[in-house]
Image 1 (tube, rainbow, N blue to C red):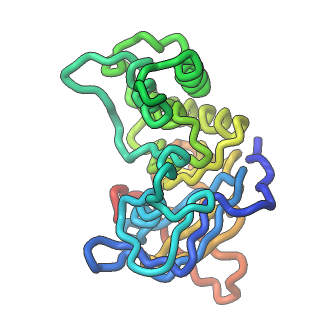
Image 2 (cartoon, one colour):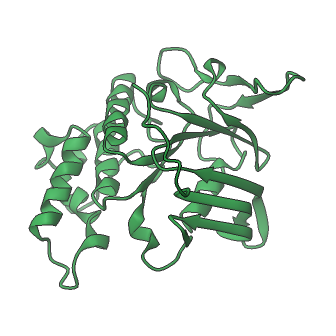
Length: 268
């Protein structure tokens, strides 16, 4: 299974000479990048390489210090742009002191689409159900999400983001912290998203379960893009599904320089 063919039209994400950081300190430097409709882009890099800051800039969650980021033709953070880009944060579990079913959690992702009365309509309930079905949680829709496994909860978070019917979905370490079986279930959920035509940007250290759907890989190093191209077999870890340190070689670089991907997570 591979991703859908990228659309030759205008990019859904367009970064031009972008520097991103916090306060006045840049973590990402002078990045230019275009993501087109239908692409499935894996963002790779060692701890501290800047990959998480890069996607936070795309979401308007980190400060753009230079350059410009456009989402579907509008500047990042513009009115209405938030409903068109979904985000699955780097979290392992969801739930709190108030019991919430999977359906209730996923329904909260529909809020940006609700009418001025703020009430769930038939179209909203249908979108929530479709999102639940897409991640194979149909049989658990009325189960307290706190009772699910970590991998099932991660799929619930994906469904919550999907319920808003985003045109672009950004996922931060979707397979981190869950067992191999859950990683493969998440991989199947991502395949369903590709079949639905969602453009995906996935920050990950564990590329294995996503190998069949990734159409393009970007390696961040020292806040800059060190490689942008097809997914290389050298980027794939052992088949046990756990994070490993990977040796990534840029086939276009005759010097043989390499990027080392650390298994650590939570980098800036």
